[in-house]
Each structure stands twice: as C-alpha cells, then as structure tokens.
Length: 78
Image (cartoon, rainbow, N blue to C red; front, side, top):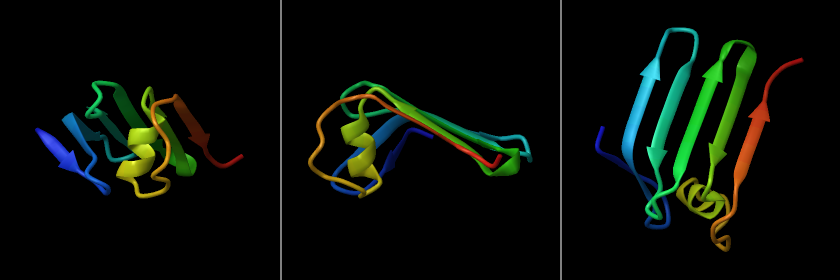
C-alpha cells in the first residue's frame, strides 16, 4: 500500500500491513520521515511505537498540539 490518510492532514507512507490469522502487523513512515509500527496478537495484545508521537496522535485525532517525540505503548491481558 503506498499511503494511508488520517485525521488533521496526517498520512503514513510506505505502508505494509500483514496478518497471520492470529494477529496483525503494521509499519509505515510519517510525513516527517520517522517510523511508525503496530502489532496485535493473541490475548488482546497491542503495541504501538513511533519516533514521531505528534504525527501519530494527530493521525488518530487524539491530540493535535504535540510535535515530535517518541511513543511506545504496550497493552495486553495479564
């Protein structure tokens, strides 16, 4: 997939999305050239990482007033 558009004029390029039936994996590049990746798996496990937290938060329409920064979120059961 070439690119994906989100909220607030943000987009990710070089997008790759794969699934193995038990989970999914996403990777791409923010407009600033920084990496973004996410994975989901068994047991409601979810992780999200980026070297441009502001772009990810704007893309998801969660918060508009952040520039740059690192993002590392890991969630799951148990």
